[in-house]
Image (cartoon, rainbow, N blue to C red; front, side, top):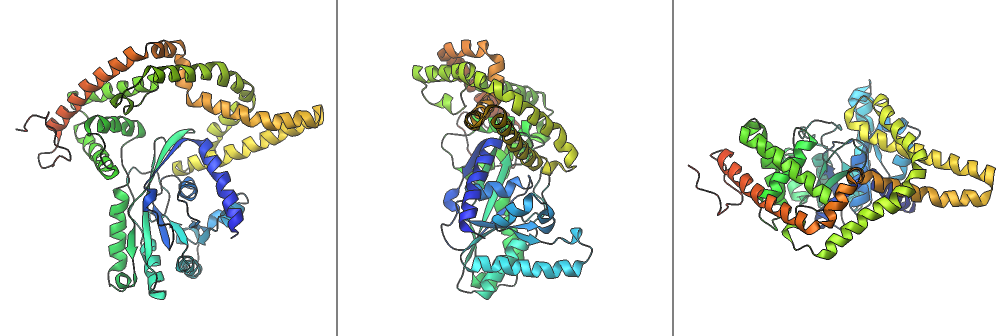
Length: 453
């Protein structure tokens, strides 16, 4: 694996990821050791996109274990080789189980030697990418590899870093994703010598991943319950407590969702979040002082969207809209698996956009000369970026005048939102106090809560 090629490819993939996702939030980079052997072990909800996010975000050179059937793809094979991926043979993909086992022995030896030399590898202990709302039962590969390193190289200690991936809308273009790196689990020679090291490390890793993942019935529910969490929590709590609070809301909501009080409150919180989006502010913004300058900045951004980005995006619509529609329609036909849909959209969209850009530039070069082709080479990415800006804020653009009116009356809108937030906070606290299980100890006792009877 060429380090220079890996670096350039990672830079390109970072650009691709930045185009596909509106926001990639990375938390816990301080948990990633700067040197020494590391196994990045993540949950696996989104096929090839999961390792891409870890590769472009972790700051280390990572070699991933990948199922060998992916290497059959003419498009994926050079990318996987450039990233140093190690092929793993799954029994379900091969009729000869003995041959697959022998192949995997070689693959495990390769991964062990990467770690022994101070490198890093990535692995998904669930085994298969899936679209289930719960973490699947973990396989023992990460623990066995770590133990194997320490047995062969007792001087080494391996850090297993849990990686929690949470997608706001997993299959949607320009969605958001959260990548959390958890506290490393350390495996050294002494621990590797213990009889139950594989089971113990796997169980500990399971707990680490569950602490970094939030499960809900659907993403809209996750969004609204995250609003509940923000309204309920005190300011400046730790990330761990935020995740624990979110997990509790998601775990208890199915039990009480049909209660009239909860249904009404759910609708109110959803409407409040929509108003925040329309005003261009976050719940966090309401807890700090917003000046007239903030209002003017938001007015300027909205006018920029209407006056600059929209006209620049219109020429690109001729090129980008057919690609977007084709990918949207064709992707479900290309793969029956929902967990692979986003990766299919990313790869197909990337290929189609690059092909359409190349054809457009070549056509202009033939018809109008090199200068026109050069102008197109510069203009197409600009209009593509403008298209992303318009796509990201399409709801705000549809509201158009009403959004602008609200922004000009920004101070009144913020005052109304703050008043609504205060009412919702009290209602959420009261609902938690009323509906929480009697044996549940509150994370954050609130003085405003009445005594539970």
